[in-house]
Image (cartoon, rainbow, N blue to C red; front, side, top):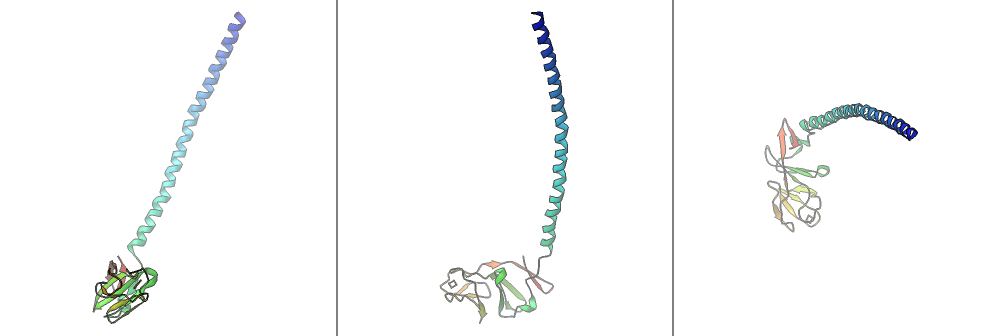
Length: 155
Ligand code: FES
């Protein structure tokens, strides 16, 4: 009985030793987590820098055209940007979607005060994009533009 008691004491002491080691690991492990949090903070900084870059681009959008590129009483089609810019009267500029509201063809020309769709013959006013001739029944969607310094930019 006394040997058993000694072993129990030995294991008990050993167990206490293991517990001390484990608790030391546990307490040692927690400081490791803190530098990881610091690493996350340092990752936030480049993200902020990236988010500033698009803001700079928004401040200076590329001009779509010079005002002198748009003939008075006519307009010009920018297929890649899906935009038609018109100048119904001297110094007054308008912009519309270049996608026909009938079945989605790209409008192709401007003549006699109208924007022409080649697919089924719809025509739209250069003044407000309204339907001059069907089969389209809805006007071309207007787009907002900024005109300053002789440059036309999408708003
Ligand atoms: S898609 Fe333009 S007239 Fe039909």
